[in-house]
Image (cartoon, rainbow, N blue to C red; front, top):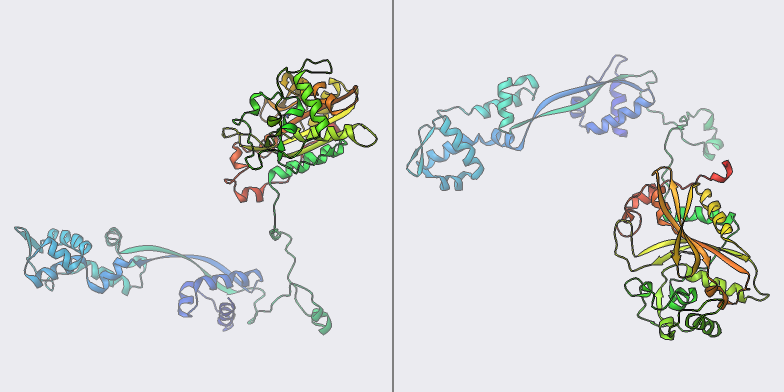
Length: 505
Ligand code: PHE
């Protein structure tokens, strides 16, 4: 670019009226690459060293075939030559001699011009190549002599040569260049930065500085990008912390059936405990230990009941309880936290816990289901809580993510009574969708843990994927999670903000 810049400025220095009429031929005669020259002109134009007019020139150019005809003659002449040399040739022999493509085109044209004829299986010449005219070659020669100018060919000739794929029309964008208001025969580089050297030498006094460009895009930030799920998780976490919830340690994916199911009063014959729904761990297949006294109380609750319940009345199997699995819900962690809460030094104290982490289910995968997803779970343990507290807490949480219209539908969970599915009205989607599950933990679950009798625990859970897909308008879960996710999608995902409807209410 610098060479081109110097060449342009030097050329224009001849006189104030000197112009480069057309940069395209000028570049060729100056032995410079036209693209580089155009680049240099744009840079000079920005600093008003030059003014330019845009030009557009069209001319013809030879294709490879056109060049070959100009060099060796047209296909029909090559065929005629070959036949005159041999006297006569079969088609395969002709093809072998001049090549298949040349034979095909040349034969056709020779027949049309009646330069050759058929003699049985053979072709024989009726004319000599020096008696006939190679029109195509003559046209191409003429075009080359006329510097490939558009008007060098008649419309008909141009059409014929294009149809024979000998020439192309080429359009070049170029410029007419003359001196600009800030023209100088030499480029004075404008300084981008004020340096220590400039201050030391005093050069800053005379230096010309580049103007600030406030419209330039910022440099792309390198490094990592948060996945949309993590962005939504960060928001949910913030909201729950604001509501006084403390995060539970969920950084352990393998659980025992005991914590995942039995402690939650989920019967050992429950269909969810089938390998069809749960991923059991092969190695190690069994958990190492469970709190034995508590285990005994859980077993008794399943077998004969207590706390006003008659239990499930079956034989509780230790082997079933000890099976390791990939946790199917984060409620496995909630039950451990409640057990700890009941048995901590100083005894039970009211608490609010939440977690947002991964769970696993042996599901048939489709557009909305994968074998792993994330659960948001919250619970409040306190004296004499009611269903009203649960509804109120859920309403507060959902309001903070902008969902104000909620409906609750009676449902069943083995570990909650009553249980309620949560439906939210989505103003964008204009429909009611299931957004979560909730309930009050059963006495059969809480009593064996050793929680005081009048302590109630309200809890709810939802998937992280559902609100993320709605927020980021993703309809297929495979576009959100898994090996088919596009990196660019993650990189370009906007930050996540939820409209807090509590502040305006
Ligand atoms: N564990 C339930 C699920 O996996 C969610 C839930 C949590 C329900 C707490 C009630 C109470 O769907």
